[in-house]
Length: 135
Image (cartoon, rainbow, N blue to C red; front, side, top):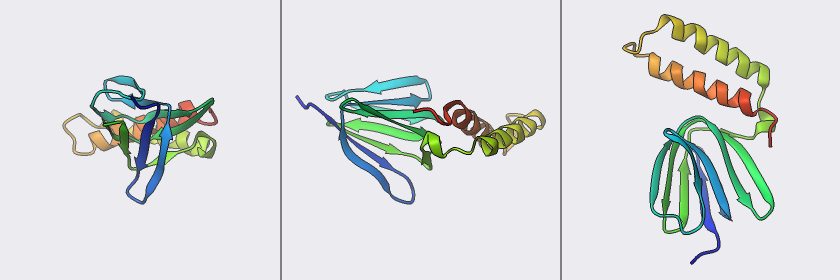
């Protein structure tokens, strides 16, 4: 049995993280999930929100924009468009994005082509605001 889980976080631009970790917590579309070493095979879509991993006594926190997480044979791969540290979030910019998405959602129906993307922008802004500056 393995003592650690290998975590890879990949964005379209680069491999962001490739390290052994003790635990991972992420925002799945059906709820928050936790992954420990020797976890069964797992696949989940991610929603925008707080993503964290623990190495020893230190917990690292990031905000994902969505994506997918897969665990196979003690390797967890996370594919996401963007990921950012809570300290790097511009809270005023996030609030402006939230207001803009709220205003657009008021005029869109779920059948509109722009609805899904606007709803995702709304969720990303909410996640960024909720986690700005938190570690």
